[in-house]
Image (cartoon, rainbow, N blue to C red; front, side):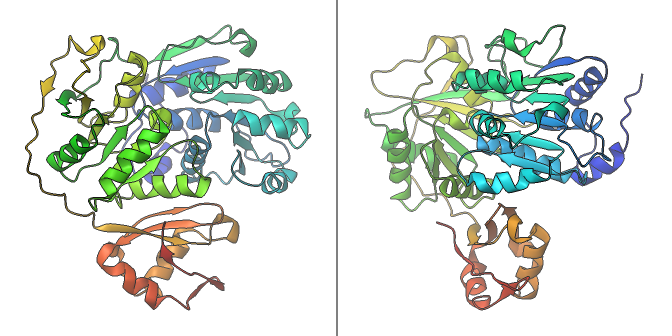
Length: 444
């Protein structure tokens, strides 16, 4: 039977894609007839769109008085990404985000008029429920995205409190990129159906090349620099096991003048946002991070994964490598070994190639983009279109000199051509956007 979805042609146009993939169609079809659906699919396969389109079929667009669905996520970044996809569908339905890192009072104001959908992290959602800021009796759909990651993060008790508070739930959707964590009994997930699009063989990953390099020193920092120069200017994620290693490796790269950003869980929210924006928009082609970035984050088009530290286990190895070779793309994962380290046992059966690095190396070219910061965002009624128009009309920029624009609640990050950035800041130093001073500056 041919797959049908109301308004699909319009949605595909909004998303600038030609069609839904098989996993998305299977998920939507299953959600139409089953109360409990578990969706298993690799990172980057489009799970977010799959469960959002399934959810839209259950939402009553005419009901603006009650909250109809809740989506629980393990991190604020994942909440923000789901929000972006939801808004791109142009449903007209109100959605509210609830997560730590910004003022709870802002969320409380947003919850006064109940949104159709609430997305949030367990701690903040539980807090709002206890404060009676969320009316749970009307919520008929519950989605736990990356549910295994949420439970691993120690939120099981809070998730149980939330789910126990949702007494009217008619459908539950769980998503994951692994089968490692069983579904807890308190979710009342029986009967259920599983949509499994995970690779059959453990660690199997389409178009993934596996290589390794042996460092001459234990710290490996100099080897990392040589490796980056050897690979050239391609999007690369370097995984470390500890935050201290993240900052050490990042600094070693920056000391040579190579643009690089780092990301870990102890950073301030603005710094985390800025780092990911710079990496996504091409201002920096290198991201140094912990396993916090192994799953959940929307970071497309990664060419290389470098394991500065050996993954703590095979599960971590698989999820790190899942950042590259996504869907139809190809990618390469590289293990960096110290003189005393050996390839882990789960790689010995692979066709793994050794890389030999030359002592002489040439620094890669700097990216063509830089990121500017604007202290205005969604809560100031500023949109991407407003910013693009401002840059073209008041900044005298050409469209081809403007890159990715990301608008947050009270700020925006704007990629512009490196050679035009200083002139743009000077040109708009007194300019206003919607009668608000723009005050562009280089993002820190």
